[in-house]
Image 1 (cartoon, rainbow, N blue to C red):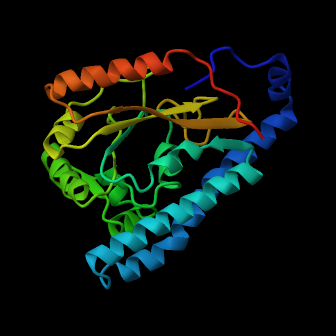
Image 2: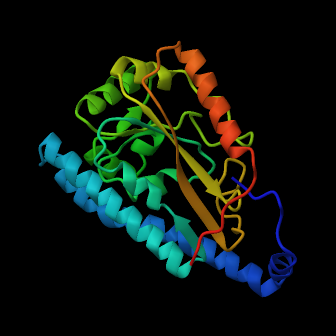
Length: 267
């Protein structure tokens, strides 16, 4: 979520400085390159162990490897790339068992930030990402769920939920194009109803639209960048139709995210 109060005069003056523009450009390139390096680092291990380990051991190793890699990445961004993240509320969800994690989706970084704090979470991923050379090997080792058809997603997610794992699904289906949230897909409500699990909403708030749907990948970020993830309402297993639950979920997100104020992150 962006802060529509706009940049302060000091920030506007700073961003107009050519040297600051160079700093933001270089920092953006370093930040994206660091993620690629981390993914390349786990690539040979994921390729090696995927055929050797049992399903249970492979998914456990894979999920912890992804969490450690993404946590290393977020720490790097905070230390060297002008970012500040408040993700502490996510820690409250660890050990709470099966549920659907349903965040809004303003940025490419959303899943990275969530998975950096939740070692047992299972992510529903686009098929193209599952086949991607950087992300795919670790995702397949972790037994993440390939988003091919709604039926396959529901069957795979229900299996993970029955095993007690939280499943991460973005209700909008892709990154937000119409702030504050796009229409939610009904398949999430159908899954929650059939699996009999609650839906825990997550509210992701960014200080800038960096890496949003309309943000070119190598466009320089507006620094400093802050992000907070809050725990939203936990919906009980739906009893209404999937379409009605999707509408309820969308209305909730719009109500919570419509006030364009991002709380300052201390530190």
